[in-house]
Length: 272
Image (cartoon, rainbow, N blue to C red):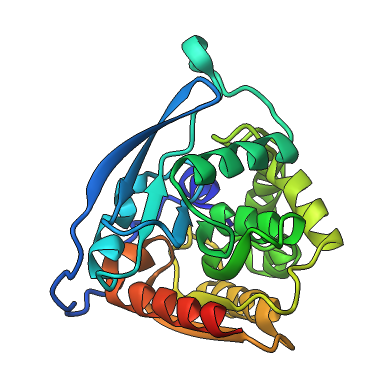
């Protein structure tokens, strides 16, 4: 499930497993671009972007700063804050998936990314990345999906959750998320599309994630692992990687692991 839904549903804390990390290798600068009359804030390394990040719904671009710092100095990358849809009212305005993806494409162009870039997505941002790659395969050269939302996860998790919590989750999926789209509708589209087999795809799965009282934590972890593994099963360039971190904290607590997997996908995308 995406981070904004998890934050709504779960009262448990998100303590993480801390692991020693190598020293940062890249500097990070703040960049602003104009897209469709909106100012978009991004954090970028010094090289032209060949990697673009799609954070979870309701998350923040700054969560990825440490990953940018751990990338090789020659790996150009940008993470940007998706534009709010509410305008002056502050209320989230609805929009379709195509409208959202056109905005993403505009941001990618404005940041100077050329076709063949790698998309890195977390949570619902990973589902955006999958759908973007399936509808615009010429633009995307590779995917790294971190704790990705999955269209089948609700049914897989139903036996592990109290009935009231599962019903509430289903209701939240039909509401507008912070990006102005409904995750239930995205899931329905994800079932009808597939990322082209020639695009390298790596999935990073946390070995543990926060759950509320009454949930079966071991069942939840195994269901998530199976759902994530299904995304790369049978793919020529598919890879499934476990991370020693709590679900929403992978990028913050293991930035070197994420950076290494990004560089791996870049190498494969460049040679395939």
